[in-house]
Length: 139
Length: 139
DNA sequence: ATCCCAAATAGAAATTGTTTCTATTTGCTT
DNA sequence: AAGCAAATAGAAACAATTTCTATTTGGGAT
Image 1 (cartoon, chains in turn yellow, green, blue, brown):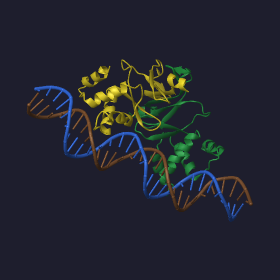
Image 2 (cartoon, protein in one colour):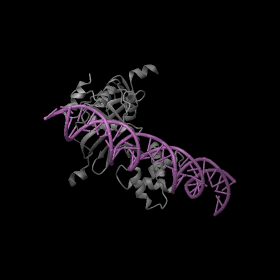
Image 3 (cartoon, chains in turn green, blue, red, yellow):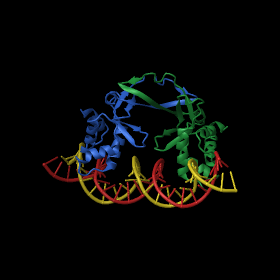
Image 4 (tube, helix red, strand yellow):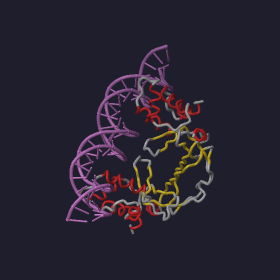
């Protein structure tokens, strides 16, 4: 299950440490965007010694390797989520504001435009907020 | 020039203080997204006593009044920009990554969809990054 | 024009998410 | 099994933002 992600690390000659594997498994066990502190608290049970800086370092590393995507939430905390898009195709995220569940979707012709108002378009960031089906049933 | 914005404050019974007027004028004098510190430094010349918390408080207030829009930049600082859309119509922003200049644009049918992947869409945030025409000429 | 009070403010201090630093440990190649 | 660069813990530093309290002020009422 986690091989795809671990391979991405090895491809780039990063070491497969128990902590790194645990972080990836932690993401796999949820379908959520998670922030460093949540992960830290979740894994402290497993590792008697676990530093928060390690979590930060690895999340940033994973983000660079295409394993995680980073997102700035309105509460000013960093969040990361597993990138499930198979082929690194450009995609967007929809986040449930109740439970934090994350879906991915594609908008094919979102910005074919090369320029907008005289600006040369370099990239864009689209985040959609909504309520997932599970949370809708609950309320 | 600044009357439109000052009116928005008065409409809601907020006081027109010299600091508030100066902050709005400061935005008008630039076409930029600005962060609290920049504004603070820019206005300290004018006001011998000027607290950074006042800037934060007013930017947040202006944001709620529809005078400014708030944006989370990747550097983890808050930025605000004047909302030039006449009628509070839903719009998006394009930011120059060189100089910070901001343009506004509309995508009419960006999300007519009411649901995506089972998520009920509540709102979306689209930020486009690019290089403005002035900065393109320079480089 | 003056009084008055809620709103606005300054300044200091607290808070908190994130990063840096240094000594120690550990994966992985040989 | 040895050695070394990479990874890590833990403490400390950092920086953006918020909170708190005493003081000041805008603007309606008099």
